[in-house]
Length: 392
Image (cartoon, rainbow, N blue to C red; front, top):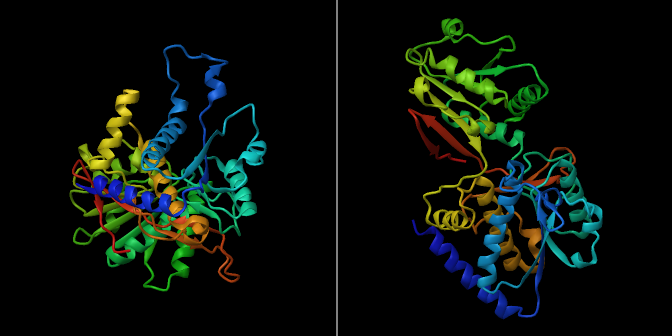
């Protein structure tokens, strides 16, 4: 694929145009990530000897990905001034950092942050009227009435909306069963599907809800199934152990009954899903990010990471790279008007984000934040993994 070459060539042309148009102005970006520098270093000495603690990986790889994107932008002459901060710093509070005079004129915040930090960044973004890109947290952290917040890692409700829409388009004539368990998140999932069903203006799904809090027997439920009609089971839980057990249980009858099992985004971490005894049964789950490591650009930056770190990068590295590159480019293109262009398509690096406004109160139509609504449906089948192209 030539995607990487085309992207970088376009980047060079774009940045050259920006530099010529505004040679003296530099755009300020603040990047926040959990680096734990105070925990790792005692003065100038490293605390862990020859070991590398695993808790460092997510934040460090996110930062390294963002830094690699900035290196490319710097080589192209991009007029950027970027400030990097450790959200786990013991020396400086988040409040003192955000009020630092060095950040006067700040135009964009990008962060890998926890819920409390997301709320702080969101408040600062609202005060300064600049975008805040929440790149990793998959929920809104209680943020509302804030048109400067962008949630890239889609919320659980967005996943439910995407699954419901997918089933409407592809399985409306099949038997659909929602398997629910006891639990706070499980109750939330059930409520989301109920609300989405009640609010839909399209054909409403006819689905059965089955309580599996005390376990689920595929053999017993098979009495309600038809071997000539597909049955779609929706796993109403984020618990990976439950997902793995459910897939194993349903695989015992999948030779007789055609089954599609729809899981949650957490299922990407279940090893062996769709392989072994689970072969022959289609298993789906959703993700808001897509990194094709066979893509030329992905391979190039992955090699750069491996040469430097001597390890294979995780998705957090690619997340940092594409978040920084895409939104830095948007800032350069739109200059002082980036907040009005958050839904703009294009400048895709790996993921085709679909950033849309979210109105949680339909009556007041108050814009609460922006959210990435693009979901990829990952299919595990016969030991393989592929992406299902969706029509929405």
